[in-house]
Image 1 (spheres, rainbow, N blue to C red):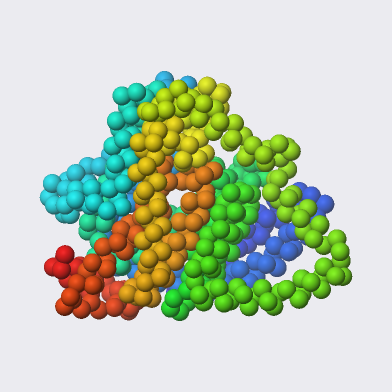
Image 2: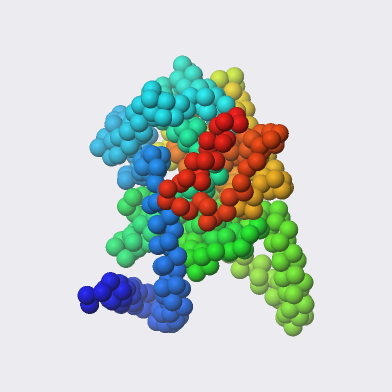
Length: 519
């Protein structure tokens, strides 16, 4: 056992044996078919383990690329992610009485470190990111933050509004600093992959919770994070995000697929997490994101059409042989959609419509100002309704409009619309390289997921929408890119992956210098 590969095989053997023993103990006696389920699971584990063995070198290769290109904003982006973790749930009363408990410091300290680092780099002009904060697409979010801060004057909880608004402004400032120091396309590709790493790590943590707290982790038969706390909706969203990215990279619209084993494993992991979370809006958003990717990719559209043509006769034959098949399929679909809830739960979107209606009624008393960003939903709506443990309105748009009225809604919507527009331009414009257009279509699909999800959850306006910020940053890169390329006399090298993965970053630095000179 002196060589490394033997030790890794021993660890894998022990982990798999432990997982088999645990699964038998948990599920074999849980139901009449528990033993059968365990047997099926073990059979499926064989190809999954084989896939993991093949995917491991590809994952290590990606990790080496990340390590070789580590830069100043990576730890700050990580700090923002750490500050979003939740370790306890507070009701409205405790939130008003004691704003700064021990667990709250785990949120405040990383954010404070980020703020100090950004101010220091601004003073030293490494980089001077103030211009990026008030230019282009990030400027729309900056205006939204300023409106939110101004709403402290009439907020139902001024201290809460001030802190949350400044927290979101610090997040936007970090995005502006990344944009200001970006060294071309590679920076945004790196930013997206670093952000997706957080989604993967959060899901790994959720699955680790399962054998430790099996009852709590399957709360209501839905996969949930116990420590840190992660709601089923969040678990489903993370699974959908990873599944969409894996789908787009396994079936690229531009260029060739790479690391097939790793992305196949990622796709299976994301789908399994999403299905076990039983999150309807995440499942619908996943289907919408895949549909967006297929719709705007000529290569995927052709494959989808040929698949439909091939499946149509089979489906027709099955329906002819069993006339009850459509009804059975409908019943199974509705059973999954209803999720064993009461009959009226679907019509009210699990109670959301009642919250939204009451929130808009409260807004009607303050139509020109709103009731304070981030505080209106929690204290003026949910607190009065007696939903003390809920911290948000489960809709970005309702949250923004009742907090800041149309003053905040306009710049907030403008940032999203502009992001959609520039990603669409990149996909359709042949001036961009295949790698740039492929990343654009991946982010286009992810933006579709986030946009649909934002109507039923807080995905874009709540601290901190890291994935949305990464997408928005790439849209800002697209906005400025043609101005460099189309300038007369400028010749830019179209970079390939082999140019961008060098640890010294010479090629990327040369691109940054050329871009700066021609700006």
